Image (cartoon, rainbow, N blue to C red; front, side, top):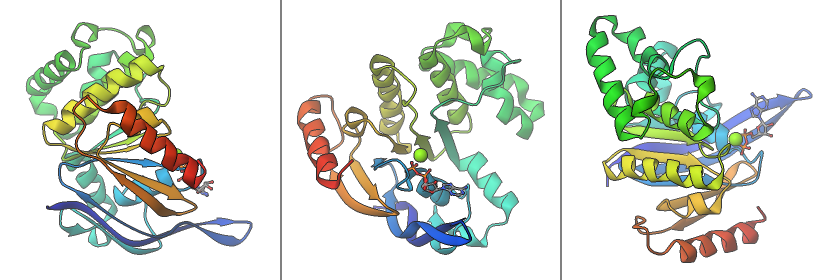
Length: 252
Ligand code: ADP
Ligand code: MG
């Protein structure tokens, strides 16, 4: 199985009161191409920091991160930004959309920065994605005139514009009610089924249970892991129970 991400012995520290504290304390992790992985763990255990480290969004103190066969330490800031823009998509808890632009313009904005000449093509792709993701009729809406779930769908469309190899989601359903959260997971699962690797941070056992591997973090390292078959929609209760047993075991 080809690996899209290999992290070896990643150490990331932040200074607190003149003392360095290892937020990532020698983490090694590998993600296969096409895999659907989630990260769980107590608040402050380093989940977001790990996601930023392996996506090249944030530097590390020691260790090594390879993405798609390239060692990220060899990349300049500009090359890292280019890599993120061309091969990665990011979804956050609150999509960072601009208030003075409608939904469509928000979705196409990052692509426009790259390629102003192809407005028609970019718009066509955005419209196709919006239709696929269920917000086709909302393109002219202001972002204050749609629901949280619709806003997150727009965030997903924006993340998919460059046809990324991997989607990183930092608690992408964290601000949604459970029905909207499951709908967003339906969309993310479909994106994964079509071949995109997905890595999600989540607190929600029902979300994690739909992924095929769950990494559990505790205090700066991966302390446990669960593997499942790809989710087909049938055994959610059984999977959720396994996740919750593990959560209790490691004290989440
Ligand atoms: P999680 O996502 O698991 O809740 P984070 O990765 O956000 O945790 O943070 C892990 C730890 O690192 C926390 O103790 C947090 O306070 C600390 N931390 C994260 N980012 C910074 C930063 N930029 N400066 C200082 N400390 C940070
Ligand atoms: Mg976090």
